[in-house]
Length: 110
Length: 351
Image 1 (tube, rainbow over the protein chains, first blue to last red):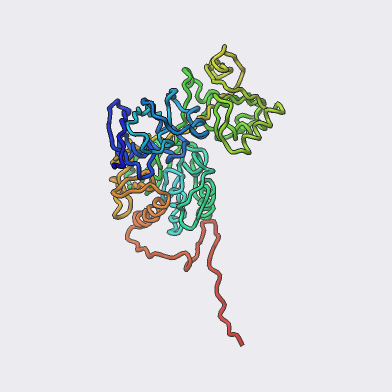
Image 2 (cartoon, helix red, strand yellow):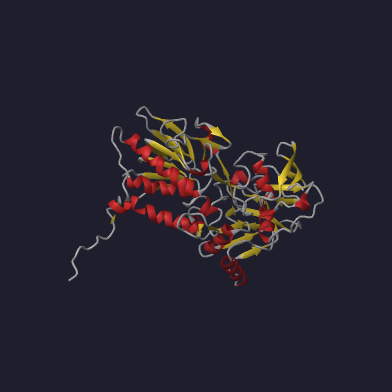
């Protein structure tokens, strides 16, 4: 059985990327985006993945059941710009096999 | 004009450690940082978060790391230009550089070390249409000198640590403090949240939640703001100052126009030698640089700072040889006249 899942990510230029994300490397969505260099370094994951900046904000477009937002993520999203009801912080979404077929769009850079 | 040996742009951990390493070589440093306090990301974004990969510290809070680094370099008397962003650089005929900030402060040095991390932190500004018209006329995004607000009416917006901490601080200084936040929950140290609760309960501050500031008014300077509570009708309050504290986001900014080779939002350096950029005399150390195998780790920044100082010495003292000295052997002579050294062992016979 493959340990990779397929994720569709629309980058900040509107280009759709379909990528294979490993589920056995303890990666979160923000790190997967960096792994594939879908956005320039230095414009995502600025705080390192502590939910303390919104540089990895994305809009979840598929109906996957994702982990609930933590209080930290809620608080960050309450202060971020360009927030939509389907906004999430990529760094707070740990990639697992349930997320096969996930579709997200990256929010604009602040 | 501020004159120094090594002008360091960025007062984060890498820049602060460079002061120490330069001091060992008798080189003086001056640091420029866009933030009002030294420490960079460690102090601004996550001061209360632990770091586990600083050698010899099994665990240290980022804010404490800054304090320790300041303490370590103190005897080398670094100068600071804080709350100003390095804007332009000009090479002089004698080979030295003049760096000017956005406030016009000029610095001259034979060596420039960019330790700028992810860039200078620019405040995230709320989407209020005439916000920029009032910048420096009542609107400020960071507080450099709280005395400016003595006996003034102040409105603070935001829900994080800095909004809470400044609300607490200014409640003692300003004539009136109003804190406005989009949500009823605040994110900060428990102690700060509780203090703000107490200030609200005893009427020392006004707390308006969940609300958003919607407009700014005043002829030449700010005199009132409007806000709405959960999208209901707007209300107005008189104020002398509006301070939105929505965090900061880093931008490489003006240094990207200095003619340096940039790759992936970072400055390319020669990592096999001394972390010098394509412009001789300008170095880039820490998270701001890139080279094959680069890791953005504080401990890597320390190493890069150390090698940069050796190369800076050779530029500043041409022709002089440099022998590596161990602090344990030679001790440390501070520029302030202080001396630290190992205690001498006693040679005495035991009868």
